[in-house]
Image (cartoon, rainbow, N blue to C red):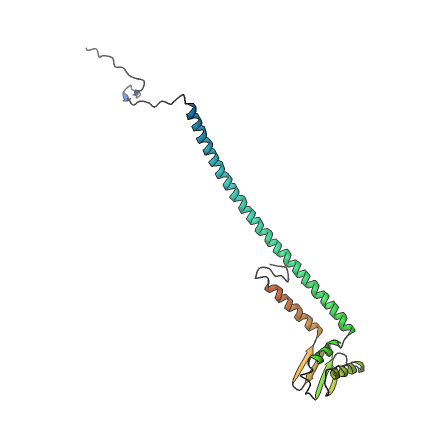
Length: 216
């Protein structure tokens, strides 16, 4: 029996569970001490990484906040458009109602004023006409005298026939002559003005807001 010389093993030798040598690879040892410069460098690197991470978080929160602000602003502008549309609609309605009230009062006091204005406007066209038929809602003697005078003032020297128009308002009239016809009805005129204003306001809505009704 030969005595084998004992073999020295270092602390970097690895064994398995049965005692066989697995490796003599040196085990990396962690450093237990750092210089002041190394510590400061590590701190600076960690601080920079922390700052970068916080900056990314802040940028994400900022983008999210800006998106929410944009959405809120869009909703506010949409609501403001509706408010402006309703305001303009109410103003237009008030203007129409005021105009109609003033017009009704004026026509009640000066029933023949529209007819007089029409005869003056048609004076050149009626200059060569021999006969004129005027249909009005008020065909009494006073109205006939006023129509005769208005026609004479407009330069019409032909024959004037004044006829009663059943169902017509006092200020309404129809003028007929061989080559033409003119008529006026306060209610129909008010409807045309309302329709024209509604069309004008709706045209400004650009398909988004109905400025006449204040609706989208």
